[in-house]
Image (cartoon, rainbow, N blue to C red; front, side, top):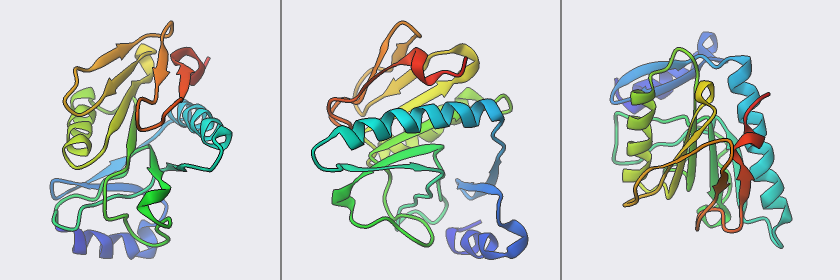
Length: 179
């Protein structure tokens, strides 16, 4: 399926409320759990606190925001959490943002394969995302991805860093894991 047909499919009333992505031309439904949602809330809270602590709000943390590239008719991605700087312009009110986010966060639900999530992160990084976190919640760790850098594996004893995408951001991995 191509993006135009996918967007028309999303517009149907019976499809509202579903979390759907277009990945390489195929529709994929996301099925988050309560634990997934709680992890997402903790991460959003940590990033939002950091953003509000800056002198000027540097950008926005977004839950389930849609992104696609104008020259890619086979992908419309929906990271669990994203962050975009104000330099990107106003927040999109309808449809997908026509760029990849500055930060993309994928939280692994029990029915998702880690390999699939790593492929999504590879796509984000190859198309402009500067930082990505993979949170396999059952393992209580975070995989940190940056373009051209080795993957960092952080455990509950480590601090999650925002690097140059979220300058000055820091949160313990334990603080973003549901107890």
